[in-house]
Image (cartoon, rainbow, N blue to C red; front, side, top):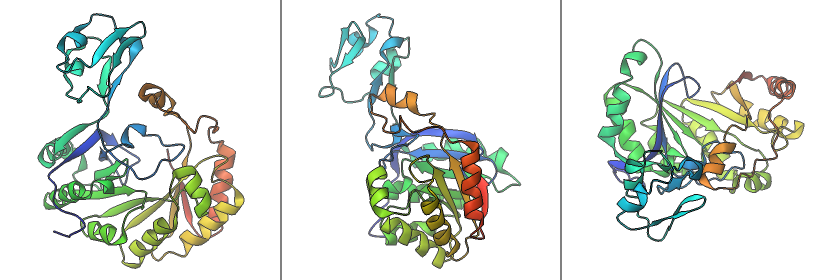
Amino acid sequence: MHGLCPAKTDGTIFAIKRYALHDGPDLRTTVFLKGCPLSCWWCHNPEGLRHAVDMVTVGDRCVGCGECLDTCPEQALRMTAAGPLRDGAKCRVCGVCTDTCPALAHEATGAGMQVDEVLDAIEKDRPFYEGSSGGVTFSGGEPLSQPGFLLELLRECGRRELHRTVDTCGFVETALLLYVARETDLFLYDLKHMDSAEHARVTGVPNERILENLASLCRHGHAVQVRMPLIPGINDSEANLQSTGTFVASLPGIGSIDLLPYHGSAVAKYAKLGMEYRGATIPKSNPQDVERAARTLERHGLTVRIGG
């Protein structure tokens, strides 16, 4: 096993999505791993940002029965007028409250799983992949933030002849990325902004490593599908589109880019998690602006696909 990526047969996920249509070729099962080094203003999976599993209480679901207070082994809950209030210092995320609440007012933001458990869930969808390019996509968060767990999943999927896609932001050590690439059939690789300072402002990290890693994957002949989340007022300027088109067109083996219009559908998730949504003032993508962006990128000789 590579020194950068020790074997790990367990990890933390926050969802397994069946029958996914936009996470790689054909029909997919998408496994979402927790943890991400970026903090994009528009992130649509805020529950995947932290590695740790958190407990969330949705107060307006509470019926006031008190079952969770009585069964909590750490006595970490107390009832208030707004519903149960959790003492984060006492809660050890055991999940007893989620099991006992009849109103489903308590939720965990993820769960620990073994490789075999994840593969059992994936295998249930195998009949839908047969005879197509469908398979499994590992997303997040950032799946490479759990490299040992991801690698074991990829290897086992390879043994079972399942098509393996990794959806990544690319902010990872290059040697580790290339090592994982040996067990990956396709990368979905996001480009968020070409200006490093602006990239750092809206995602929390600069982009030099991200761009270098994308170029490295392409130079080594790995299959990559470049994607650009199109965020109004953030990265849809003519200057950034021109810069993106020039860079992507220069990559060996890359002749296309996917545009992903912004839809703002994650607002409710932030409210439930008690998190600030820094994308609250970003307007929904206008179809005319999306078409304008597509035409700009096409002038660089790229085939542009507009995603969901």
